[in-house]
Image (cartoon, helix red, strand yellow):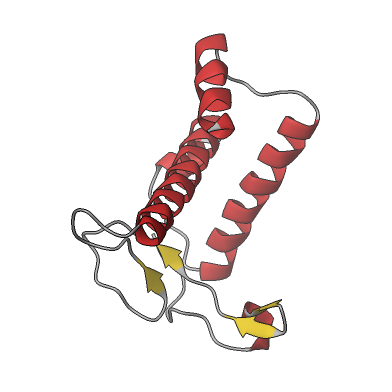
Length: 128
C-alpha cells in the first residue's frame, strides 16, 4: 500500500548521502516487477555470474526481512489489518509510523510478543 500520491518522493529531505552521493529511496521488488529508476529487481536468468547471484541473494534476503517485519507489526497492531477509512493521508501515515515506533519500543523493552517457536524462527532467519 503506497500512501503517497507520487513515487518516488522528491525533494532533498528524501535523499540519503552515501560516500558523497545523494541516493534516492527505492523499493526492493521481486522478479515479477519491471526494473524502474525507483524499483530494484533481481537479475533474471540461470547460471548468472557470482556477483549477480550475490546481489540477487542479498536483495531477496533483505526483501524477506522487510516482509517478515511488516507481518510482525501487523500481528502486534490489529488496526493495520483493516482498510483505513480516513480522509487524511497524513493521519494514516502517522498511525503507521506510531505503530512502528511502539513496536521498536516493545522490542527495546524485551516485549517480543511472539511464541517461542516464532521467536526461534525469526532469530534463525536473522542469523543467516
